[in-house]
Length: 298
Ligand code: PAF
Image (cartoon, rainbow, N blue to C red; front, side, top):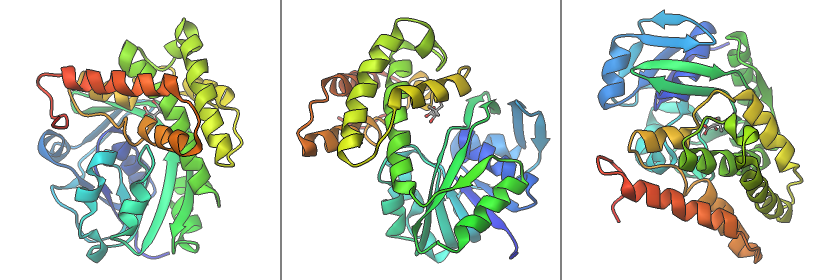
C-alpha cells in the first residue's frame, strides 16, 4: 500500500474521531483546524468516553499536501474549505451530514468518495467525548471505484466499523432523513438523542419520520424510517446531536443541508411536508435568537 498521508479538514468532534482511527491504523495524519480548536489540538488530541486516548498530533491552520483529505467541516463551510485543494490532494472523502457536499467537493477534486457515519462524538472543553460506536459506509462518488476498498481497509485496520456500498447517494439521503428527525427535535428541546424514544417526543418523531419516508420513497428509496431512527437513537442515546451542540454554542446549524434538502425534494414532488417545514423554521428562529453567535446574516 502507498504511504498513507491523510488530512482531516475540520477536526471537530467527529473529524477527530476519524483522525483517531487513522492514527491507530498507522497513517500520518494532519489535523486542520482554526481558532480555538487549532490551539486545543496544538496541546494534543485528547479523547474520552469509549476510549481513553492522548497523543501529540500534527496540526495545521490550512490544508496541506496529502493523499487523502477527509472533509468534516460544517456543510455551509464546504465551498470555502475545499477551495483549491484539488492541487493538494489525490482523493477527498466527505463524512459530513446533509446533502450536496460531495458535489461541491467534486468541482475541486477529481476523485471523490462519500461516506455516512453514525459514530457519535461531542467536544467538551477541548476534549473529544467519543459517545457512540456506530457504522460508517463508504462509496465512490466520482472516479474512486478502485480506491474505496483500500480506504475502507485502512479504517478497519484502525478498528473502525466500515462497510463499502455501491449506493452511497441513497445512503446519504437515508442518513439525511435520520438527521432530519433526530437533529431538529433534540436541538429544539435540548435533550440527548435517547430522550427521543423515552418521552412524548416520539409522537413528534413519528410524524417527521412519515413525511421524510414519503419523500424518500418518491425518490425510489425504500426505507423503514421509524425503525432506522430507533436503531440510531439507541446506539447514540447518550449523544447530544450535532445540531443541539451548534445551538448550545451559538453557532449556525446544518438545517439547510438536512431538513432544507428534504423540503426541496418534497416541493419538487408536490408532497406536503408541513411538520418538517415547521421544524425548519423553528430551528432558523433559534439561530436568530442567539446573541453571541456567528450565525448567518439575515
Ligand atoms: O448529527 C448527529 O448528531 C449525528 O449524525 C447522529 C448520528 C444523529 C448522532 O447524534
